[in-house]
Length: 384
Ligand code: NDP
Ligand code: MG
Image 1 (cartoon, rainbow, N blue to C red):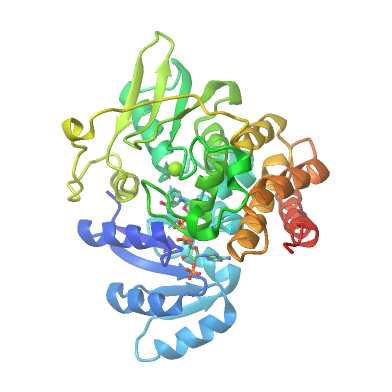
Image 2: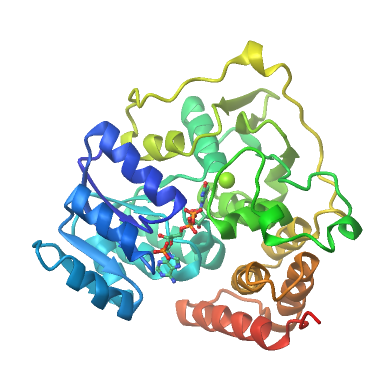
């Protein structure tokens, strides 16, 4: 188990649960970061007494500096401070920010030899090749926090090697609109989209779960984390969210990881690995559950998943463009400026207009990310 952590995005859904896990297990919290929610950051700072608090937003940082003036906690702001938060204080960094803003601090944490408990999937979707190549070069430990990837990691660990794997079986609940046709989703509101049946999460990932872009992002995340091709990943709809994913081996045998739908479990696994600890999380009650069911996704109903799988095959900057365009489109949807179905439409247009082939450098990925956001913000269809 690690002795100390820093948490990027400590005010979010994963971030607050990471702090809860640290408290339960007695892991020291050395640095935390947020963006705008300084009320919660101040409470967290007073409770966990970290050495450093980063607030990305400069004016929020000024307010927090005043609020914490009676303590000796340092407050920093901007991207340099976020990177500092990731590398300078703790043995392990939990990357729980939302969006591709996590890319640079993750690369810096790899260089600094920190264990990375990675929740921030957009980082791998945007720069997966770069991040994994750097991690292999430096021998960095990236422990997945995304529940499906934590499951796959545990299944591969159980086998002791990934050499005999045939494919990964990536499960997803199907979100709140499972089985619904696109025509039925025209008038979906943000409130309806963020109401996930099984998981309580931040707004962006909840919308991604509703469009199933989340499963698409996870498809690309799995490809990079486990070094497999798109043909070696199969998505399965599993509404109960008990089987968090599975690995099929060449002899036809399948190993699955099961657990209740509670993000503290994969967070705890990433912090305790290779040990296991009792963090007070119950095992599933199988008799009470009744049935576990599985089906194939209907790609006509979930075009975002099909688009992400297509971007995975295209390579180049396609996934970076898609993910950044999706971030911008989801923000517009949450602000009630874009319709639910409009998310797919504008993201697909951005991918068509902006994707390029080859092996992009960091600056090419950053440019692709920026162009995709501008494309969406300039061209999205205005709601009348
Ligand atoms: P939330 O929206 O709940 O939290 C996001 C966190 O990131 C907050 O602390 C927020 O700060 C901070 N943040 C947002 N924008 C910026 C920015 N531009 N610069 C710096 N910090 C920023 O997200 P979740 O916790 O739901 O998700 C976090 C990541 O984990 C995502 O990548 C998601 O896909 C992944 N994930 C989440 C799961 C879940 O159950 N929630 C499950 C699996 C993966 P503030 O609140 O102060 O504005
Ligand atoms: Mg997940």
